[in-house]
Length: 190
Image (cartoon, rainbow, N blue to C red; front, side, top):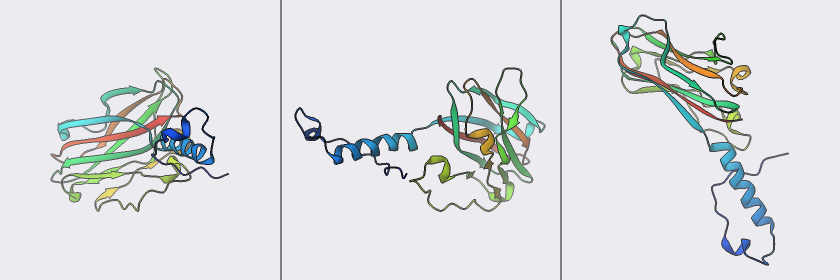
């Protein structure tokens, strides 16, 4: 069964007043508005690496702390960025997830995001996947910039994340003398 097309539309007052006929229009408007929220409402965890991050020896684990999901969640996409390119090398970041305190961490990716110094300044690369949003949505065409490797989410890990699961950012490798990188993790309640 197909979803009602998500739409950001308000209900008109006449259709909701006392003795107004319940119409297909009102039902479709409600369904479109609910689907719009189900598809596009999300939260974001930002992992920032400020300044010259090549001063730390890679790999470096748990950079910028942990984030804990309060509810069951689903990761819908991830964007890595690097603002000032280094003079050599490639920055590779990873998001690791653990389902219990003291438990082991595992990557949310089957392919981790990477940005080479050749990509230049102010570069970002992501993992937009229409399937994680919903069947009535298709992202516009996306091509990763030159000098980058787009992340690929591990659906077995990211589709249903139990409440009280923690995520962290790891630096796997670093450009030489780069500045200001990070990952934006978009998720929603499952």
